[in-house]
Length: 141
Image (cartoon, rainbow, N blue to C red):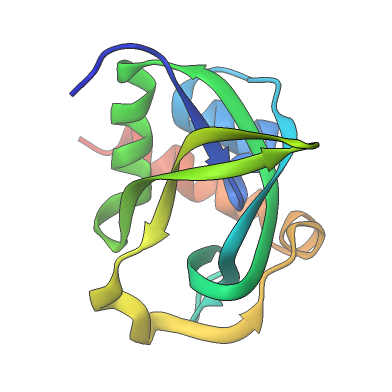
């Protein structure tokens, strides 16, 4: 695996500075980006989303640059076994950029709801409790 910094496309909770800081210990400046050919939905019974390939779909998010191997390891741990890290192409304005993204593994597709996930709703209704759960998970041995 390359240790050169890479770009990461965040479409869910990692768009929020407090969540990103809780996971990687840093706050990154992201730029608005669009991932074409994917759809974003809530996972059943969860407050967070997943994306899956969907030919007519578009997912808005943030593109973070210069993500190193140490941060990727922390992100892999945070995302867990439900997600697969893939390389995709995202649009930033009229330009395209390669980026890594976490996609729901095909074997877990049945966990996906048909309910669209909205960042603002998550921030209002779930962020505080979500950050507490991250902090508890990080402290566990």
